[in-house]
Image 1 (cartoon, rainbow, N blue to C red):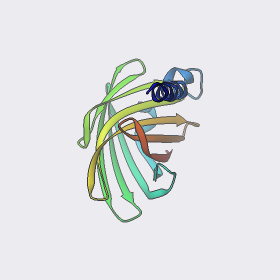
Image 2: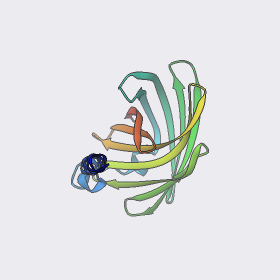
Image 3: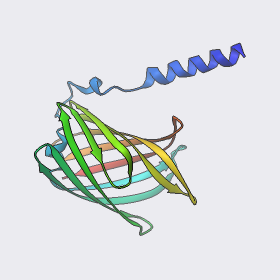
Image 4: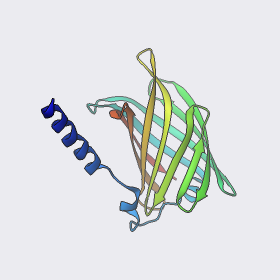
Length: 173
C-alpha cells in the first residue's frame, strides 16, 4: 500500500510540474486579443486525434465573428471529412482584463478563459458522442497567435482528468 501511495504521489507531482500557466506567455508577442482576431471572417482547418495520436477526423471551419461592446459572438460552421456538418455559436464576454466567460448551445455550463501575451487558454465541458456512446469531456484549449493572421489551437480532451484525445486547428484570417 505504501508503494502505491508513493507512486501515486510521484505521478501527481509530475503532472502538476508539467502544467502550463497562462502567465508563462505574458511577454510573448504579438499579443492576442481574441475580440480583434476573430472580428469578421476567419477560416480554420483541423483534426481530431485519439490518445495514441491516431488521426480520427479532419475538418474545415468557417467562422464569423461580431463584437458588440464586451461581447464577441462567434458563429462556427464545421464540415468534417465524412460530410457531417455542425454549427456552434459562442457568446464570449470580456469580464476583466485578460479574463473571459462564454456559452454555446452544446457547451455544458460556462466556459472560462484567460489571455496573456500571444496565448489564450479556454476551458469548457461538452458532451461528445463517439462509437455510439455520449461522454462529458473537459476541453483545455490553448491558442497561440503566430502573427496578425495565423493562430494555432491545441486542445486536450479529458475524461476523469486523463487525456483521451486532442484537437489541433490552424486559423487564418
